[in-house]
Image (cartoon, rainbow, N blue to C red; front, top):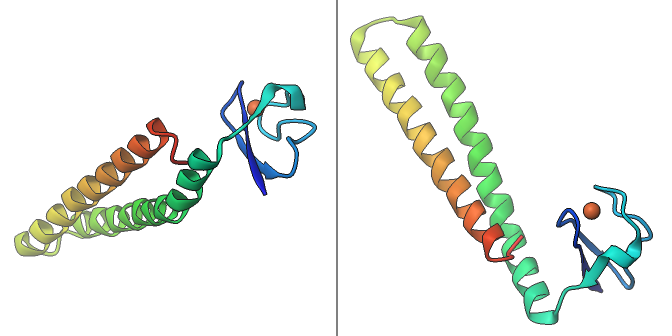
Length: 110
Ligand SMILES: [Fe+2]
């Protein structure tokens, strides 16, 4: 199975040949280029890790929601402090995961 990259939008397609039409931007097959084997290997290798980073971002978003609910609940200063810390940690985790994804994409590992 080969990987093909749309030179217009960056979409990566999998198949024996380039798709007739880019599913993302609609350009024709002649606008796709074959991704070399070493780059394809990097893309496949990083796919799972990128998915894990996306799961981490999703969990951080859920943590932020819980933290905001706890801050709003405002039972006592000790509780609010814990929820404020949780909100900060959620932000940090989310931003670190995004930075990793951005780094992977910049290196062609997506
Ligand atoms: Fe495209």
